[in-house]
Image 1 (cartoon, helix red, strand yellow):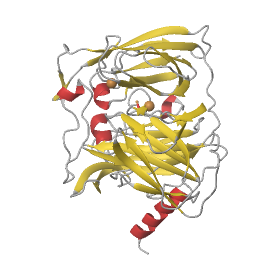
Image 2 (cartoon, rainbow, N blue to C red):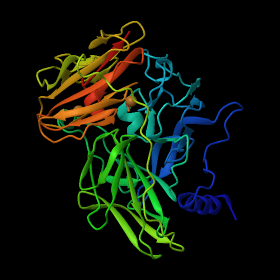
Image 3 (cartoon, rainbow, N blue to C red):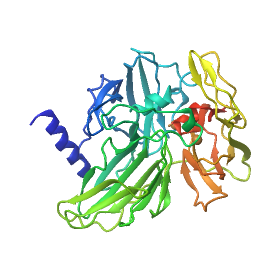
Image 4 (tube, rainbow, N blue to C red):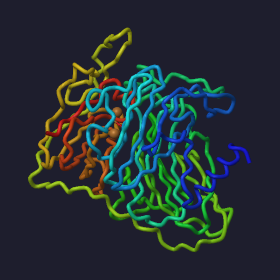
Length: 451
Ligand code: C2O
Ligand code: CU
Ligand code: CU
């Protein structure tokens, strides 16, 4: 059996049972669990030709990193691009030194350089990783991967399927189309042309008949908000943005903005050859097909809640943030590049930063205190607003009924005002931005400081 066949068969099997994870990585240096080599690579995504992508370890999808809750993980990043990068671990509550934001938390990893990340994830769930520099291009060209933190105790699903959702900005011949245009950046962002799950168009994954299945979706796209639904099958939302919810509930339509995740649980149909299909709106995202003997599972395993400190809502200080559109701001030229500023947070557009020019924080919080952020989207577009280093509770919204839940990214619809709360328990300077990558690049970004 050659390597290709082996990998093909192994990855089909990996979906079925708890076989050891197959890592496509070069074996990591001694002392490291993973080694991520960031470099250009030609990958086959489109029907008729290769795409000159930027990848982790030469492949797309990127290696799925699997860490264990409360156990340290060591990841070496080697930058073989000809521009600087950093890697951010989205949704993980880890020390600021490991957060992967240039200048704010570490120096950029220059071409040819290596940076070692080491941290202990406090929460289990579905997370992801991506660079935090030149994001439109670095993420848009493929530097996006899933990061799974396994529960300290195995919850006991029969299959655990990880799916990264990305709409590639490519033509049928594989060549890239524009990752951004000013016209789209000041609207909803530039949509990709080819909808993929793990780099494939409408793939099929095999699952054990009658088994308890965990399907993890991660929106690793730059732009698109997916509307996840499965009209023919009863699926259960078991976790949102990495965090198990107290009362799992049926999936109807779930909006998942860039950066957000969704864990679905279901009992697979009992007979081999049956299917379960996931859709974005009415387009097929992917299909599960059952194989093997009926596992006769009746109930979904329960996921333990993550150890998130509850904010004290009675004493919490309220801070208001307005997300606005400012079309009157002219482009600025820097290093021969034209930068646009279309969006502001509290009237302030993010201008970028360098080692000796770090802007002021949008707010300074006292360590250990509870805060309520009131987030007002004063625009006609939606914005998935993300905070680094903390997991917050979404309390309420003026547009929808909220059953409070934990997240690191909250999707604000047109003119939506939402309240979130958290304990500022992680000291550092934490990015706070919209995860529509063109929005953060054109102003909708800032940071808060916890001292
Ligand atoms: Cu996915 Cu600044 O984050
Ligand atoms: Cu993040
Ligand atoms: Cu936005």
